[in-house]
View 1 (cartoon, rainbow, N blue to C red):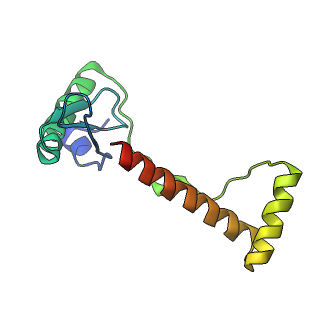
View 2 (cartoon, rainbow, N blue to C red; view 1 turned 90 degrees about the vertical axis):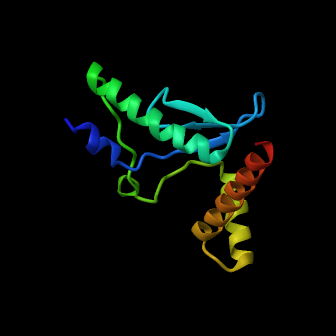
Length: 126
C-alpha cells in the first residue's frame, strides 16, 4: 500500500465547473468518489480541491478504503470494434470513397467532429 505522500504525487484528474445554481465553482476528482469542494473563483476551487484531496486520501487510508489510481493511456489500445447495420456500413463506405480516404479515417473524422461539437455544447451550458 502507498503512503499519503505517494498518493498525493499521483496526477489525479481535477474537474472544475461553474456552479450555475449557487455561483462560484465546483471542483472534484472523478477517480476519488465524493472528493468534491467549491470556491468563489476557479483558482480558489483548485486550491480547496488540493486540501480536499489530501483530507480524502487521509480518511481513505485510515479507513482501509481501496484508492483507485487514474487510468493511463497505456491501458487503451486505440482500437475498438463495433457492429453497425449493413445500410450504415454501406453509407460510410460510399462517403469515405467519395472523400478519398479509408473508412477508418472517415469514421475517426466523424467521431472527432461529434466529440468537438459535444465539447462546445457542454462548455456553452456551463
